[in-house]
Length: 448
Image: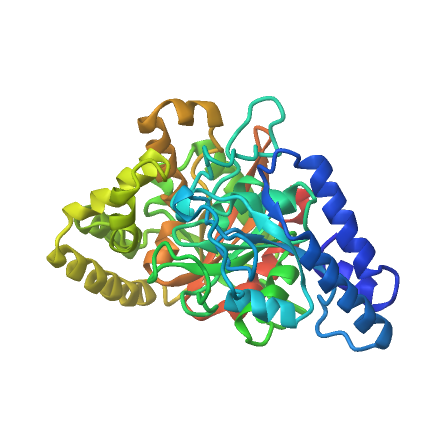
């Protein structure tokens, strides 16, 4: 069930929040005994919050439509009195004294914190592999263990495996959308600055964003509203009639498996049938921003090196080696590179808005390939790095150009999920969510 459906049943007295929280806690213990999805449960907190929600429900004093609904939290959100280690040995035993601001907002809306979900070291991986804590396997291949996607790996798995109705993750170059797409669920990448990063362990202070991973857009919409403090979009009567959509060819066509492109075209045909006007064409800013980062470095690597470089050098081996090397490699970039990078991103963001001004949405596949098997990635650094760069190759465009984006399930290819990514200009979450809701309805035949 969706979070909103559960919230409705709590409101009408059909479900007691205490029993609901206990149901999920018991299910997690049975289905995730090795803690590859949840690195730790917050059982005491969850039951206390559920008890308070139960009293409010009986008294008709609920705080929000999700009051009493349990959700999971990526292990980079500070949780008072509970270890928050961000997937790295550098932070082993780190226990904050206060909640992250977004967790505080969720608690004030009555949401119940089930526990902290798995992630790679400081979220610096699009595939979700963590050799310290283990890696939960993708639920769509029970024979070969494949990556779930990252860095919000456990977040996506908690929803896909029915261990939480919704999850909160972060997205710096795709870390909400990648695992959502590969695990067959919905993800929202908010615009940088829409949700407070206070109390979230940083990877990139200029690129990090916070967003929900859910079963549908309605849940993403209400959670975005709770986390940001902004009004939820009105999804009633959402339609694609007359909506202009650009299927971007730049970057997307050169990198994407033809079979995945074919599946995305099936989805776009359904959007056209629902009234959308779909055209194809290049977006020069996509090509230019990739070239910019190839020459001057990525903001995530440069900022992570600035924040963690000294710690890494003093504690070698406390991060997964390929992640250490990716971060420390940013030492090779100069102050001139950094200035050129940030000025270039600002310029290209403005150019992107001009280049796409005639369209309501720019779309493409969320992931260019299916999730790779886990074992080969742990055996070869080169294989690991190639998979990591593949995973962020399309999603990072929205972060670098300060866009907001969703990923919606778009059926399956070879038994594995395909995601359709919808992008809109920064701070246009309301419009994006409304159009994503209409697209979700149109895509139902592919996801039946």
